[in-house]
Length: 133
Image (cartoon, rainbow, N blue to C red; front, side, top):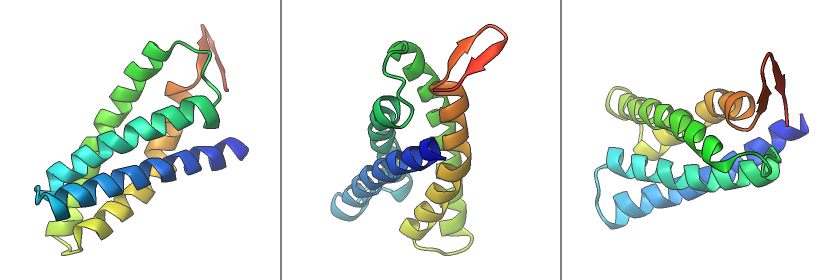
């Protein structure tokens, strides 16, 4: 449970960076909300990776390049799912893009991102066995 709470804190801080970037790009620089969402996701991913690796999962001794490659894979999926979810909630359910982004961020953080970070990115693997950090 402690790892879950720390991972959620890392996700919240990553989401804060994500939202701030998105708001800055959309509201100040008038970028399309889907592009702002994607750039926010990338910024949040960087923050979340650093916090998850070094604090939530204590995986700083593992191969960082392997972790980065795995993280890029799951965040590619995250960006795609997030963009589709934000688009759908904004265009079909007429929610404000930030409400859509919040809903999708919560769902993704509690499920997809946490599970794949814990069991795929920040886990030391030994043939035939998974050792959780």
